[in-house]
Image 1 (cartoon, rainbow, N blue to C red):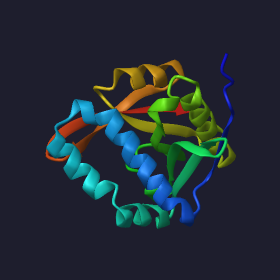
Image 2 (image 1 turned 30 degrees about the horizontal axis):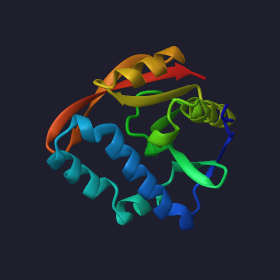
Image 3 (image 1 turned 135 degrees about the vertical axis):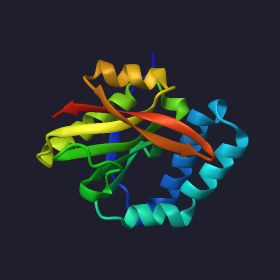
Length: 175
């Protein structure tokens, strides 16, 4: 019987930025690589997972990164956005989960739930009314996960992966 170690979720420090970027790149490629062309993945990853881009996001007001450690190993991360850092301004007094990723070796162990719970508590501490996120309309597993946790679809937006237009469903839940 394996023991599930708790997650230690903490804000990313500047000296952890490269560790975050590497984990983010790896989890993104694992999640979306099999479903997209190599050319579109390369185009997206080379821009959105570069050191400069990550540092710009990190320093952006209202853009909040968290690393989740299991023991001493970073196995997941979370990016929350508040105020003008949000990708859409459709809900008043809200917090956005822009990214929530668990390394594939640790999926199915409840860590995604831990990150979602953390996000909810964080939003409530900020006295937000809504928590919301965008999820690729082809990612049925993630959509079902969020629906089980009370999220409902309220809009959609375009997302370009390389030169391919994809649709993200915007899902929300009252805090």
